[in-house]
Amino acid sequence: MNAAQDAYISKLEARLRAVPDDHEVIRHLVALLNTHTPDRPRPGTYGYSQEKLSRQFQDPEWAERVLRSGTESKQYRKWNAVLEETGIQSRIAITQLFAGAVHTIGGSATFCEFRMALFEKEAVIPRFCQDCFKVQAVPANLLAHVQTYLALRILKLPRDNTRKSMVEIRTDVAAPYKSYIFCESEAEAILCRDRLQQVLQQFGVTAVETRITHGCSEYGNKFPAFKYSNDGSHRSFTRPADWDAKEAEFGKANEKLKLPGAVFNKNGLSVRDIIGLSTWIDYAELIGDDTYKSFRDRPNSKKPAAFAEEIVRQSVMRKQQLEELKAKLA
Image (tube, rainbow, N blue to C red):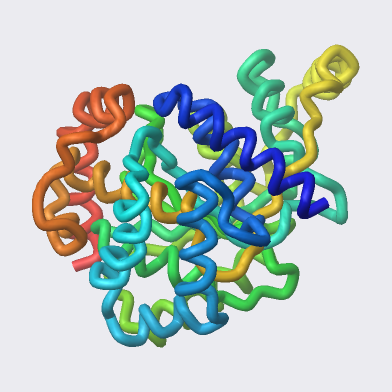
């Protein structure tokens, strides 16, 4: 299996030598390298960079050591230097980084893209999603966001729950920075929230608000009664009578959308992680979050164009959201 993966990675690297700006190939390549390091350096920049990252930054205590020493920006510069040495530029934007096992509820795969497709087409919240709860961490600046990501990488949870850290690009969803822990019940979400709060407190990460959410943000935006509420009112949400029939009909017609979830767990850092962190820094620069300046000496003049244009359009709104969160935490 490893030999076949190595051969495929080499093939993708060859494509990029011919067409360096093939974004789909880059995304596919860094996704493969996210959990697989070639047995020996391949004749390509991405495989070589991944092999070098794996040699230098793979010990089990790396994330805890960075958090404990407060050297997040210093360490990022070292990680990013590995990519710069091999000429890798941020040709793509990676807004989300993951850790943990694949998300399941009651032992069943969630197939989130399939269920979101149902919601987008029929405005039906899948019955399966009724039991999906998340811990949401909302940092007030980029530095706290990177610290939260590192905290999630070292967090020990009963089911090794899926964790995700991201920058928000959906215009109808608030909060620029956020991280999630995916859970299969309200009780599990409370447990995971408490454990995350303990880790954040242990390492002195304070500019973060933690809360519990119910299902995807889009569900609660359209159906406010579905949103998680501290008074428990979300438990009384009633599905319209025709939803089950619509869901069944959609399922029969779109079974092919049920794709297996990605594998997230790995040791150390990947090329994809570094590109993701660089994307977050670009995002912070674009929305006017000055904590980005600790991560780089000057603005990035080579941001992915489509990503930069979209975030510039959102920048005033996102800066206001940060100011509101800072005031709330104060």
